Image (cartoon, rainbow, N blue to C red; front, side, top):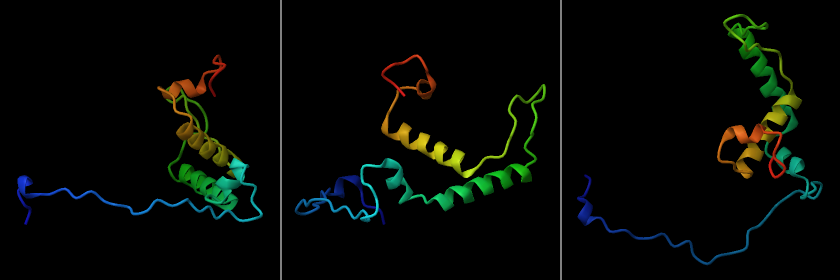
Length: 113
């Protein structure tokens, strides 16, 4: 049963006493190296798996490997390094916000990416 809206009482959540965050970074990781921190979440082996499956998906879907008059985009196989760069771009875009996605690819800006 759903109560009437005027019968619903809002009770705010109390998280309790604030505490300092705990960071458990392994001692062999340089905490100032963003790529080393990223590797804690996505291992180099995962990039290889993603690249392999991306290539298999393209083969399974008969992705065109040459440009045609009707299709200017063509497929070429990817690899783990390209996938890692691709993910890095996503993380960068998440941290460095721009008003429009096209701005990320501009070359003329001195204050941007």
